Length: 198
Ligand code: VY7
Image (cartoon, rainbow, N blue to C red; front, side, top):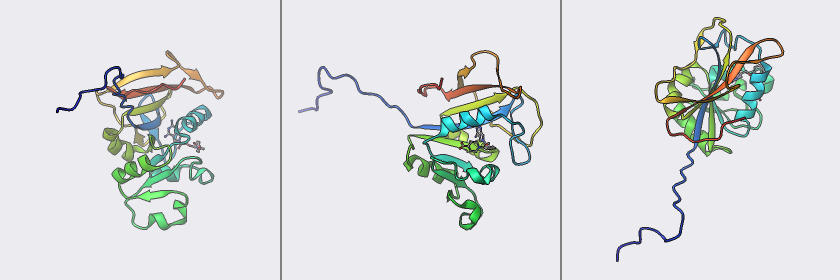
């Protein structure tokens, strides 16, 4: 006897709420994300946004991005911190304290998905890691800062498969207490489903 195709009266259960592998960065209008090992602006509202989005989820970053966080914030609390480096032995240095250190991005993404909160994983950069990670990611949360300061590190260029999925504010800019204008934007690959942050 052939198997029954389905139980009558049951709803279809094709609910593939896929794991999210997201990138999160802040950039200038020209796509600058870094200068001299840091971010060339001061925007507390972006740090709060970053903490809110990544909180409770594993974070994957390159070694230079790890170094860029002030030491007192490392590891980022409430998140498994995974650092990618090819330097043998770096993981045994005091600087690496509190991080899970791996030597490839692929391993890092697998480890992240197995970590607490790993149904959603956030890649924090920087430039080298974004360039490699882009094809493995389905979401990008991008803060655009309305400035054109120069820098030495660029955001990845999202190809045509990436679709704009919303921004806060919808039009124009928020203005920081210090006068800096910025907006939060959300991009996703074609079919990705998610709930947008308010
Ligand atoms: C900058 C900091 C810089 C200076 C002082 C504190 C977006 C950001 C990143 C990565 C901001 C930084 C911080 C504030 C948040 C704290 C950790 C310390 C936390 C990114 N949009 N913004 N980033 N931090 N990938 N994307 O490196 O951070 O979250 O606990």
